[in-house]
Image 1 (spheres, rainbow, N blue to C red):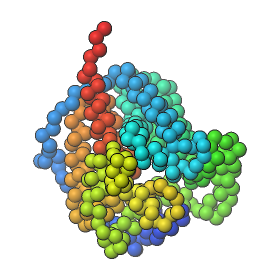
Image 2: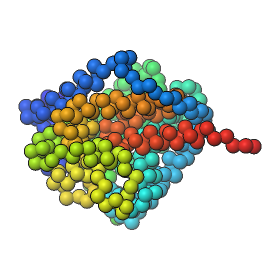
Image 3: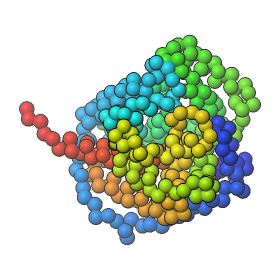
Image 4: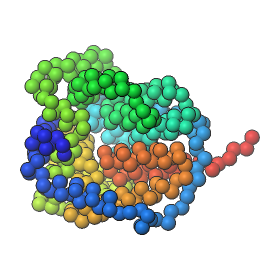
Length: 380
Protein backbone atom coordinates (compact mmCIF):
# COMPACT_ATOMS: atom_id res chain seq x y z
CA UNK A 1 0.00 0.00 0.00
CA UNK A 2 2.85 2.36 0.89
CA UNK A 3 4.66 1.56 -2.35
CA UNK A 4 1.59 2.38 -4.41
CA UNK A 5 1.32 5.71 -2.60
CA UNK A 6 5.02 6.54 -3.07
CA UNK A 7 5.34 5.52 -6.72
CA UNK A 8 1.74 5.85 -7.93
CA UNK A 9 1.37 2.12 -8.62
CA UNK A 10 2.66 -1.30 -7.65
CA UNK A 11 5.02 -2.04 -10.52
CA UNK A 12 5.17 -5.54 -11.91
CA UNK A 13 6.46 -6.80 -15.25
CA UNK A 14 6.60 -10.59 -14.91
CA UNK A 15 2.81 -11.01 -14.99
CA UNK A 16 0.84 -9.35 -17.84
CA UNK A 17 -1.87 -7.71 -15.74
CA UNK A 18 -2.60 -4.08 -14.92
CA UNK A 19 -0.51 -2.58 -12.16
CA UNK A 20 -2.68 -1.33 -9.33
CA UNK A 21 -2.48 2.46 -9.04
CA UNK A 22 -3.19 4.66 -6.06
CA UNK A 23 -6.09 6.23 -7.96
CA UNK A 24 -7.44 3.16 -9.74
CA UNK A 25 -7.49 0.52 -7.03
CA UNK A 26 -10.38 1.77 -4.92
CA UNK A 27 -12.06 -1.63 -4.81
CA UNK A 28 -9.22 -3.46 -3.12
CA UNK A 29 -8.56 -0.52 -0.80
CA UNK A 30 -12.17 -0.67 0.34
CA UNK A 31 -12.02 -4.43 0.89
CA UNK A 32 -8.73 -4.21 2.81
CA UNK A 33 -9.98 -1.37 5.00
CA UNK A 34 -13.28 -3.05 5.87
CA UNK A 35 -11.63 -6.40 6.58
CA UNK A 36 -9.09 -4.76 8.87
CA UNK A 37 -11.77 -2.80 10.73
CA UNK A 38 -14.00 -5.83 11.26
CA UNK A 39 -11.12 -8.00 12.50
CA UNK A 40 -10.25 -5.47 15.19
CA UNK A 41 -13.77 -4.64 16.39
CA UNK A 42 -14.68 -8.23 17.30
CA UNK A 43 -13.69 -8.55 20.98
CA UNK A 44 -12.81 -12.07 22.10
CA UNK A 45 -13.93 -11.34 25.64
CA UNK A 46 -17.54 -10.90 24.45
CA UNK A 47 -17.71 -13.58 21.76
CA UNK A 48 -15.67 -16.72 22.34
CA UNK A 49 -15.95 -20.38 21.47
CA UNK A 50 -16.51 -22.83 24.26
CA UNK A 51 -13.24 -24.55 23.39
CA UNK A 52 -11.98 -27.96 24.32
CA UNK A 53 -8.40 -28.38 25.49
CA UNK A 54 -5.75 -30.63 24.00
CA UNK A 55 -3.02 -31.21 26.56
CA UNK A 56 -0.06 -32.24 24.43
CA UNK A 57 3.13 -33.12 26.34
CA UNK A 58 5.35 -32.32 23.37
CA UNK A 59 7.61 -29.76 25.01
CA UNK A 60 10.61 -32.08 25.35
CA UNK A 61 13.68 -31.98 23.14
CA UNK A 62 12.76 -35.43 21.86
CA UNK A 63 9.82 -33.85 20.07
CA UNK A 64 12.09 -31.25 18.44
CA UNK A 65 14.46 -33.95 17.19
CA UNK A 66 11.60 -36.07 15.83
CA UNK A 67 9.94 -33.10 14.12
CA UNK A 68 13.25 -32.07 12.52
CA UNK A 69 13.95 -35.59 11.24
CA UNK A 70 10.51 -35.89 9.65
CA UNK A 71 10.94 -32.44 8.07
CA UNK A 72 14.20 -33.57 6.43
CA UNK A 73 12.63 -36.83 5.24
CA UNK A 74 9.59 -35.08 3.75
CA UNK A 75 11.80 -32.43 2.14
CA UNK A 76 13.91 -35.12 0.47
CA UNK A 77 10.76 -36.89 -0.71
CA UNK A 78 9.34 -33.65 -2.10
CA UNK A 79 12.55 -32.89 -3.97
CA UNK A 80 12.80 -36.35 -5.53
CA UNK A 81 9.10 -36.43 -6.49
CA UNK A 82 9.33 -32.99 -8.10
CA UNK A 83 11.43 -34.35 -10.96
CA UNK A 84 14.01 -31.56 -10.70
CA UNK A 85 16.86 -34.07 -10.84
CA UNK A 86 15.82 -34.93 -14.40
CA UNK A 87 15.17 -31.31 -15.38
CA UNK A 88 12.17 -29.04 -15.50
CA UNK A 89 10.78 -25.67 -14.53
CA UNK A 90 10.31 -25.06 -10.81
CA UNK A 91 6.69 -23.94 -11.36
CA UNK A 92 5.70 -27.40 -12.55
CA UNK A 93 7.37 -29.36 -9.75
CA UNK A 94 5.21 -31.87 -7.87
CA UNK A 95 2.54 -31.66 -10.57
CA UNK A 96 2.38 -35.30 -11.62
CA UNK A 97 2.73 -36.61 -8.07
CA UNK A 98 -0.02 -34.33 -6.80
CA UNK A 99 -2.33 -35.42 -9.64
CA UNK A 100 -2.42 -39.14 -9.03
CA UNK A 101 -0.99 -40.10 -5.65
CA UNK A 102 -3.01 -39.48 -2.47
CA UNK A 103 0.06 -40.22 -0.32
CA UNK A 104 2.07 -37.58 -2.19
CA UNK A 105 -0.73 -35.06 -1.71
CA UNK A 106 -0.77 -35.63 2.05
CA UNK A 107 3.02 -35.72 2.55
CA UNK A 108 3.72 -32.60 0.49
CA UNK A 109 0.96 -30.66 2.25
CA UNK A 110 2.33 -31.69 5.65
CA UNK A 111 5.87 -30.82 4.57
CA UNK A 112 4.66 -27.36 3.59
CA UNK A 113 3.32 -26.86 7.11
CA UNK A 114 6.50 -28.24 8.70
CA UNK A 115 8.87 -25.93 6.87
CA UNK A 116 7.00 -22.86 8.15
CA UNK A 117 6.47 -24.10 11.70
CA UNK A 118 9.91 -25.59 12.42
CA UNK A 119 11.64 -22.16 12.79
CA UNK A 120 9.04 -21.15 15.39
CA UNK A 121 9.35 -24.48 17.18
CA UNK A 122 13.07 -23.75 17.43
CA UNK A 123 12.13 -20.30 18.71
CA UNK A 124 10.12 -21.87 21.54
CA UNK A 125 13.04 -24.02 22.67
CA UNK A 126 15.46 -21.10 22.42
CA UNK A 127 13.27 -18.76 24.48
CA UNK A 128 13.06 -21.47 27.14
CA UNK A 129 16.85 -21.98 27.02
CA UNK A 130 16.51 -25.60 25.94
CA UNK A 131 18.89 -25.10 23.01
CA UNK A 132 21.93 -22.85 22.70
CA UNK A 133 22.23 -19.73 20.59
CA UNK A 134 24.64 -21.52 18.23
CA UNK A 135 22.24 -24.45 17.67
CA UNK A 136 19.33 -22.05 17.15
CA UNK A 137 21.15 -19.81 14.65
CA UNK A 138 22.77 -22.68 12.73
CA UNK A 139 19.45 -24.55 12.49
CA UNK A 140 17.67 -21.49 11.07
CA UNK A 141 20.50 -20.96 8.58
CA UNK A 142 20.38 -24.62 7.50
CA UNK A 143 16.59 -24.49 6.98
CA UNK A 144 16.88 -21.27 4.97
CA UNK A 145 19.65 -22.59 2.69
CA UNK A 146 17.89 -25.93 2.22
CA UNK A 147 14.62 -24.28 1.16
CA UNK A 148 16.38 -21.84 -1.17
CA UNK A 149 18.17 -24.64 -3.00
CA UNK A 150 15.68 -27.51 -2.88
CA UNK A 151 12.34 -25.67 -2.96
CA UNK A 152 13.40 -22.35 -4.46
CA UNK A 153 11.37 -20.61 -1.76
CA UNK A 154 12.44 -17.25 -0.34
CA UNK A 155 9.65 -16.81 2.18
CA UNK A 156 11.19 -19.41 4.50
CA UNK A 157 14.25 -17.17 4.81
CA UNK A 158 11.99 -14.36 5.98
CA UNK A 159 10.31 -16.75 8.42
CA UNK A 160 13.70 -17.71 9.86
CA UNK A 161 14.70 -14.04 10.19
CA UNK A 162 11.48 -13.25 12.07
CA UNK A 163 11.97 -16.24 14.37
CA UNK A 164 15.52 -15.11 15.11
CA UNK A 165 14.44 -11.53 15.82
CA UNK A 166 11.66 -12.67 18.18
CA UNK A 167 14.12 -14.74 20.22
CA UNK A 168 15.84 -11.69 21.68
CA UNK A 169 14.34 -8.70 23.48
CA UNK A 170 17.22 -6.41 22.64
CA UNK A 171 19.44 -6.22 19.57
CA UNK A 172 22.84 -4.48 19.71
CA UNK A 173 23.06 -1.20 17.82
CA UNK A 174 25.85 -2.57 15.65
CA UNK A 175 23.43 -5.17 14.30
CA UNK A 176 21.21 -2.41 12.95
CA UNK A 177 24.23 -0.79 11.28
CA UNK A 178 25.21 -4.10 9.68
CA UNK A 179 21.65 -4.65 8.49
CA UNK A 180 21.47 -1.14 7.03
CA UNK A 181 24.70 -1.65 5.12
CA UNK A 182 23.64 -5.10 3.91
CA UNK A 183 20.10 -4.05 2.92
CA UNK A 184 20.98 -2.98 -0.68
CA UNK A 185 22.79 -6.28 -1.28
CA UNK A 186 19.90 -8.29 0.20
CA UNK A 187 17.31 -6.41 -1.89
CA UNK A 188 19.32 -6.94 -5.08
CA UNK A 189 19.90 -10.62 -4.33
CA UNK A 190 16.19 -11.05 -3.68
CA UNK A 191 15.24 -9.40 -6.98
CA UNK A 192 17.45 -11.69 -9.09
CA UNK A 193 16.74 -14.90 -7.18
CA UNK A 194 13.64 -15.75 -9.31
CA UNK A 195 15.94 -15.88 -12.36
CA UNK A 196 18.25 -18.34 -10.65
CA UNK A 197 15.33 -20.37 -9.34
CA UNK A 198 13.71 -20.63 -12.78
CA UNK A 199 16.88 -21.74 -14.60
CA UNK A 200 19.04 -23.71 -12.19
CA UNK A 201 17.13 -27.03 -12.45
CA UNK A 202 16.12 -26.82 -16.12
CA UNK A 203 18.74 -29.46 -17.05
CA UNK A 204 18.52 -31.41 -13.84
CA UNK A 205 21.52 -31.72 -11.55
CA UNK A 206 23.92 -29.87 -13.83
CA UNK A 207 26.66 -27.65 -12.41
CA UNK A 208 27.16 -25.79 -15.69
CA UNK A 209 23.47 -24.92 -15.91
CA UNK A 210 23.49 -23.70 -12.29
CA UNK A 211 26.52 -21.51 -13.02
CA UNK A 212 24.82 -20.17 -16.13
CA UNK A 213 21.73 -19.30 -14.06
CA UNK A 214 23.84 -17.27 -11.63
CA UNK A 215 25.61 -15.47 -14.50
CA UNK A 216 22.29 -14.67 -16.17
CA UNK A 217 21.01 -13.22 -12.91
CA UNK A 218 24.13 -11.08 -12.50
CA UNK A 219 23.74 -9.86 -16.07
CA UNK A 220 20.16 -8.81 -15.28
CA UNK A 221 21.50 -6.33 -12.72
CA UNK A 222 23.08 -4.36 -15.56
CA UNK A 223 19.75 -3.81 -17.33
CA UNK A 224 17.25 -1.00 -16.71
CA UNK A 225 14.82 -3.45 -15.12
CA UNK A 226 17.57 -4.86 -12.93
CA UNK A 227 18.34 -1.38 -11.56
CA UNK A 228 14.71 -0.33 -11.09
CA UNK A 229 14.36 0.35 -7.36
CA UNK A 230 10.55 0.22 -7.61
CA UNK A 231 10.67 -3.33 -8.99
CA UNK A 232 13.20 -4.35 -6.35
CA UNK A 233 11.05 -3.09 -3.49
CA UNK A 234 7.91 -4.62 -4.97
CA UNK A 235 9.69 -7.98 -5.15
CA UNK A 236 11.08 -7.67 -1.62
CA UNK A 237 7.66 -7.14 -0.07
CA UNK A 238 5.71 -9.26 -2.58
CA UNK A 239 3.52 -6.22 -3.20
CA UNK A 240 2.39 -7.73 -6.51
CA UNK A 241 -0.04 -9.87 -4.49
CA UNK A 242 -2.21 -6.75 -4.28
CA UNK A 243 -2.11 -6.51 -8.07
CA UNK A 244 -3.62 -9.99 -8.20
CA UNK A 245 -6.23 -9.11 -5.57
CA UNK A 246 -7.10 -5.97 -7.53
CA UNK A 247 -7.50 -8.08 -10.69
CA UNK A 248 -9.93 -10.33 -8.82
CA UNK A 249 -12.05 -7.40 -7.68
CA UNK A 250 -12.08 -6.01 -11.23
CA UNK A 251 -13.07 -9.30 -12.90
CA UNK A 252 -15.51 -10.91 -10.45
CA UNK A 253 -18.38 -11.02 -11.32
CA UNK A 254 -18.02 -8.81 -14.40
CA UNK A 255 -16.21 -11.53 -16.40
CA UNK A 256 -16.32 -14.62 -14.19
CA UNK A 257 -19.03 -15.99 -11.90
CA UNK A 258 -18.45 -16.12 -8.17
CA UNK A 259 -17.04 -19.47 -7.07
CA UNK A 260 -19.57 -19.74 -4.24
CA UNK A 261 -17.25 -21.48 -1.83
CA UNK A 262 -15.65 -23.98 -4.23
CA UNK A 263 -12.09 -23.02 -3.27
CA UNK A 264 -12.84 -21.53 0.15
CA UNK A 265 -15.00 -24.32 1.61
CA UNK A 266 -15.17 -27.40 -0.64
CA UNK A 267 -11.45 -27.56 -1.43
CA UNK A 268 -10.22 -27.28 2.19
CA UNK A 269 -12.52 -30.19 3.09
CA UNK A 270 -11.49 -32.39 0.13
CA UNK A 271 -7.86 -31.42 -0.50
CA UNK A 272 -6.65 -34.98 0.22
CA UNK A 273 -8.49 -36.41 -2.80
CA UNK A 274 -6.24 -36.49 -5.89
CA UNK A 275 -7.59 -35.66 -9.32
CA UNK A 276 -7.34 -39.32 -10.31
CA UNK A 277 -10.10 -40.12 -7.79
CA UNK A 278 -12.21 -36.97 -8.23
CA UNK A 279 -11.41 -35.30 -11.57
CA UNK A 280 -13.78 -32.39 -10.87
CA UNK A 281 -12.39 -31.56 -7.42
CA UNK A 282 -11.97 -27.76 -7.15
CA UNK A 283 -8.42 -26.72 -7.87
CA UNK A 284 -6.46 -24.20 -5.86
CA UNK A 285 -7.47 -20.62 -6.58
CA UNK A 286 -3.83 -19.79 -7.27
CA UNK A 287 -3.89 -22.10 -10.32
CA UNK A 288 -7.03 -20.35 -11.55
CA UNK A 289 -5.28 -16.99 -11.24
CA UNK A 290 -2.28 -18.40 -13.08
CA UNK A 291 -4.44 -19.09 -16.13
CA UNK A 292 -6.39 -15.85 -15.93
CA UNK A 293 -3.17 -13.84 -15.73
CA UNK A 294 -2.16 -14.83 -19.26
CA UNK A 295 1.12 -16.51 -18.33
CA UNK A 296 1.82 -19.51 -20.53
CA UNK A 297 3.42 -21.64 -17.81
CA UNK A 298 1.88 -24.97 -16.88
CA UNK A 299 1.00 -25.32 -13.21
CA UNK A 300 1.82 -21.78 -12.11
CA UNK A 301 -0.02 -20.62 -9.00
CA UNK A 302 -0.33 -16.91 -8.14
CA UNK A 303 -1.31 -15.45 -4.79
CA UNK A 304 -4.02 -12.88 -4.18
CA UNK A 305 -4.02 -13.44 -0.37
CA UNK A 306 -7.11 -14.45 1.57
CA UNK A 307 -8.77 -11.22 0.47
CA UNK A 308 -8.66 -11.94 -3.26
CA UNK A 309 -9.75 -15.56 -2.93
CA UNK A 310 -12.58 -14.72 -0.51
CA UNK A 311 -13.83 -12.00 -2.86
CA UNK A 312 -13.79 -14.40 -5.84
CA UNK A 313 -15.92 -16.82 -3.82
CA UNK A 314 -18.40 -14.56 -2.06
CA UNK A 315 -18.04 -11.07 -3.53
CA UNK A 316 -18.73 -8.13 -1.20
CA UNK A 317 -20.12 -10.57 1.38
CA UNK A 318 -16.53 -11.77 1.91
CA UNK A 319 -15.79 -8.52 3.71
CA UNK A 320 -17.88 -9.89 6.58
CA UNK A 321 -17.26 -13.63 6.18
CA UNK A 322 -13.46 -13.57 5.96
CA UNK A 323 -12.79 -11.97 9.38
CA UNK A 324 -15.26 -14.36 11.03
CA UNK A 325 -13.60 -17.38 9.40
CA UNK A 326 -10.12 -16.28 10.47
CA UNK A 327 -11.37 -15.44 13.96
CA UNK A 328 -12.92 -18.91 14.20
CA UNK A 329 -9.68 -20.54 13.07
CA UNK A 330 -7.69 -18.67 15.71
CA UNK A 331 -10.04 -19.95 18.43
CA UNK A 332 -9.72 -23.52 17.14
CA UNK A 333 -5.92 -23.38 17.28
CA UNK A 334 -6.05 -21.98 20.81
CA UNK A 335 -7.56 -25.27 21.93
CA UNK A 336 -4.09 -26.87 21.97
CA UNK A 337 -2.75 -26.53 25.50
CA UNK A 338 0.92 -26.61 24.57
CA UNK A 339 3.34 -23.71 24.32
CA UNK A 340 5.30 -25.49 21.61
CA UNK A 341 2.18 -26.00 19.48
CA UNK A 342 1.07 -22.41 20.10
CA UNK A 343 4.44 -21.17 18.86
CA UNK A 344 3.96 -23.17 15.66
CA UNK A 345 0.35 -21.96 15.38
CA UNK A 346 1.67 -18.39 15.24
CA UNK A 347 3.64 -19.39 12.14
CA UNK A 348 0.47 -20.82 10.58
CA UNK A 349 -1.35 -17.52 11.07
CA UNK A 350 1.57 -15.62 9.58
CA UNK A 351 2.08 -17.92 6.58
CA UNK A 352 -1.58 -18.59 5.82
CA UNK A 353 -1.94 -15.35 3.88
CA UNK A 354 0.49 -16.72 1.33
CA UNK A 355 -1.59 -19.84 0.68
CA UNK A 356 -5.25 -20.76 1.11
CA UNK A 357 -7.37 -22.36 3.83
CA UNK A 358 -6.04 -25.81 2.94
CA UNK A 359 -2.78 -24.79 4.61
CA UNK A 360 -4.56 -24.01 7.90
CA UNK A 361 -6.65 -27.21 7.74
CA UNK A 362 -3.54 -29.35 7.17
CA UNK A 363 -1.77 -27.53 10.02
CA UNK A 364 -4.66 -28.26 12.38
CA UNK A 365 -4.71 -31.95 11.38
CA UNK A 366 -0.94 -32.12 11.84
CA UNK A 367 -1.16 -30.64 15.34
CA UNK A 368 -4.05 -32.98 16.12
CA UNK A 369 -1.92 -35.97 15.08
CA UNK A 370 0.94 -34.69 17.26
CA UNK A 371 -1.44 -34.43 20.22
CA UNK A 372 -2.75 -37.97 19.64
CA UNK A 373 0.73 -39.48 19.26
CA UNK A 374 1.93 -37.68 22.39
CA UNK A 375 -0.69 -39.55 24.41
CA UNK A 376 0.82 -42.92 23.54
CA UNK A 377 2.95 -44.55 26.17
CA UNK A 378 5.50 -47.16 25.17
CA UNK A 379 6.10 -49.98 27.65
CA UNK A 380 9.69 -50.69 28.58
